[in-house]
Length: 94
Image 1 (cartoon, helix red, strand yellow):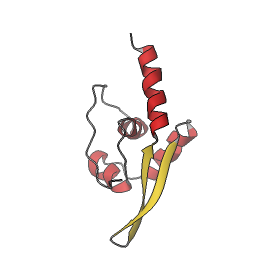
Image 2: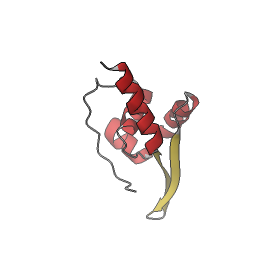
Image 3: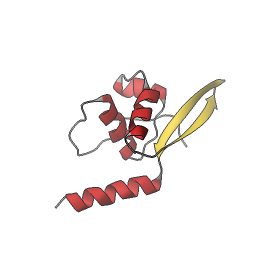
């Protein structure tokens, strides 16, 4: 698992809210950390956005990682969630 991310490229319209931004990032299969969220999107409270997405029903995996004596969480969507999302999008898209 990597702890560094780049902003994912998609063909979808640019998300507008922080929740949409984090969701779009995770839906690409990429991981995200607090540092990634700040560096890529200027989001300062990733944990709250993850909580909001989980409350909305998205199953987000997480792991606490230690790097350079610093502890932080890494968030990602498991393959099953990504597959279900792709299937539901393909059913809607003609």
